Image (cartoon, rainbow, N blue to C red; front, side):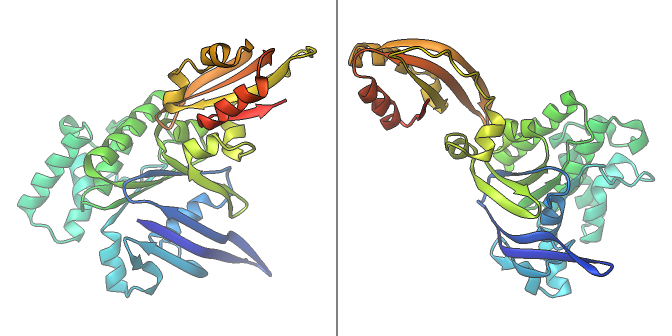
Length: 325
């Protein structure tokens, strides 16, 4: 749905040229919630604004739904942007308009009739759970409610893509969870492709299937969350899985860290080692959490006796990540 190829965005600052994006290539499959994670100043917001050409790239290709955005005429770009909704960190609502008036605004611009606008606004407010706030003004809403209005407005023209620029950063933890659950529901119900910019690891953990990690205008890692978590040395694995304390030295014992993902996290794989390979298994430390809708567990174990090497190979064949220390 979204493909960026070798995108650069360079700003002139006095006698210097600063690259906010430095050769970024990104592929977002249709129907996914795709997170872009990184610290402030990494280039995340510049990247998302290049998708709908609020920022025009200095060079490179930006394709959305098969259209090369950088080659569109002004009228073609206007039509393409109607298929791309966007929500913002600070909501960007019109304070002089009611909730219904804010949601209706893009429909007015696109030329919908009054009857069609009324029907669509009622449908959208029901979708985001704000039917009872149609006549309220933004000043009367909580932060979470304001963001729901922003989401309803972004969906007004039935977009294929929803861009979320730090949309939960101004919210408290409870509203953050509610908005992320709403985005996940919209993704599943409407088939929306969502590109979600964030600096919060918990956002990626809760809703993203795939992720790209940015530093200093570059993407240093991208892929599905489950693949990256199971890849030794990946930036995401190091950030998500807390480091385990080094085990005490025990002669004759092989220490291994085993990472379980998805259904394997619920399987009795360690007890099978005892039966099949006649090894003693001692669990030294570990943790388990939910990442991207899947359970991810990490155990540090001590193995001794029997066929330890064969037991570890067996775990790898099952698809587990095994690191021997």
